[in-house]
Amino acid sequence: MISLEHTNIERNGDVYVLWVTLNDPLASKDSGVEMNFVIQENALNDFVISFTVI
Image 1 (cartoon, one colour):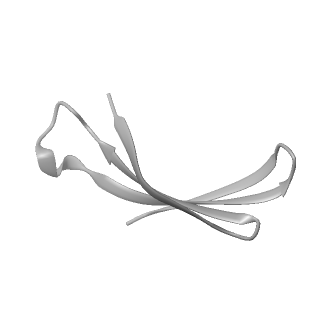
Image 2: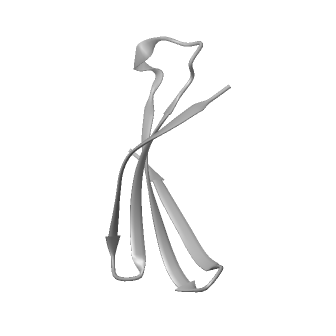
C-alpha cells in the first residue's frame, strides 16, 4: 500500500514539474520518498514523463 502526496507543481512553457512524496501508511513516519516528475507536453494527449528519486 502506498500513499502519494503532491507538494508543488510548476509550469515553465510546455514543461511541468511535479513534486510528490510517496509514503507507506503502515510503516514509520520516516518512510517517505521524495520524487520529482517532469512532464513535457508535446501536443494534445501527447506527453513525455521523466522522474527522479531524491
